[in-house]
Amino acid sequence: MSEITNDWPVWEVFTQKKSGAPHEHAGNLHAPDAEMALQNARDVYSRRNEAVSIWVVPAEHIVSSTPEDMGPFFDPANDKIYRHPQFYSVPKVVKKRS
Amino acid sequence: MNFNEKSAFMEEQARLDEFNRKLEAGEKIEPKDWMPERFRKQLIRMMSQHAHSEIVGMLPEGNWITRAPSLRRKLILLAKVQDEAGHGLYLYSGTETLGVSREQLIEDLHSGRAKYANIFNYPTLTWADIPIIGWLVDGAAIVNQTMLAKSSYGPYARANLRICKEESFHKKQGYEAVALLANGTPEQKKMVQDAVDRWWWPTLMMFGPHDSNSPNSSELINWKVKTKTNDELRQSFVDRTVEEAHAVGLTIPDPDLKFNEEIGHWDFGPIDFDELYRVVNGDGPCNKERLDARRSAWDNGAWVRDAASEYARKQKLRTIKAS
Ligand SMILES: [Fe+2]
Ligand SMILES: [Fe+2]
Image (cartoon, rainbow over all chains, first blue to last red; front, side, top):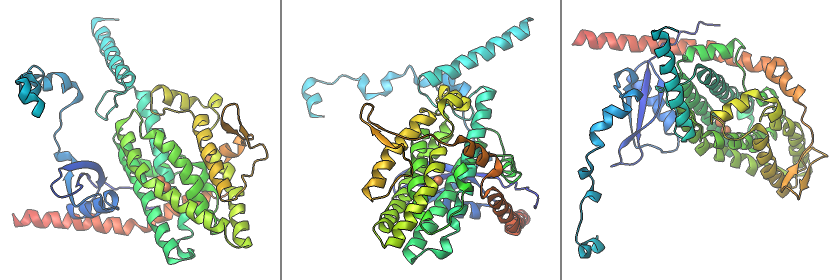
């Protein structure tokens, strides 16, 4: 048996369902280069027209927040209710129409 | 306990509390979240077994691709087997989020250390076995995977959700072909009934030992990795499949099978769990053949992987030189 030394990097795959829609994370795969990553992504994540466009990104290049950050990192948004439309009152007549 | 030990202990306790709170609230556990080592270990075991099953599962069906009775059936079978490769990949990817490498997972399978579903160690003797696998084996997989799509581990739930979207085609194409044979010539009918007789019991074994005898299962249920027990899943499979069998005039090979009016379920006879353990532990009719096929596929594909790696390396060098 040949030795198992497949150190191909991980690529994260993002697919766009239809034109105009955002690209969403679909999953990942291993591939030696971008071209193969793209081809494999098509075969793995779009066998039934699930995508009209695909992005592949080396996983090591993705920077993410950590679970421990969850509270403090997103804190600044918590006390700014004035960013939501529900914060504002509107005359009743107008309200009915909207 | 000195101060440092004590604060480490309390930190650990706080993490465990948070982990339990998430499970209690029905939130998902994600790869970067803290999780008990035992949880991680059990998930790796379960998810990798699932992944291996998808990959080895291609072999019994692949056996009939060149001999499918029509071009239509051949195209369907090719597409289905390709889907199973995809399922294996979704699940390997999910397992890797727990900190185990793809190489390790493949090595575990090839060395015989890892287990996979009992069912794929049975031979596909006639064409009728292919429709029967789609109907029974994928039918059983749907029952299991529909539950797992709600699993508490995020990557596992998402992989199963993706899988479920593809499984109904697998089952439907199988049942359609079963119905065709069941309504065909006397020879065809005999052939498909013979396939039901051989595959029925091993399919029921796919759900694992009885609840009373399955410590892994109850632990996984406590963590909400699974939300139903082996026996519950098996019963729901039997209920729906018996009706489907009768609808096309096939007989289930179980003299004890009887509808229980009181509880509204089909009662069925005892399962030979000795056979399950024998087959899972390496002594089924095709275990050796399956592993040999996997290993030789790996070895014969080595030059392709090497060429792709080398091509990527050279391309990279070229871009570095050019810049
Ligand atoms: Fe599958
Ligand atoms: Fe399937």
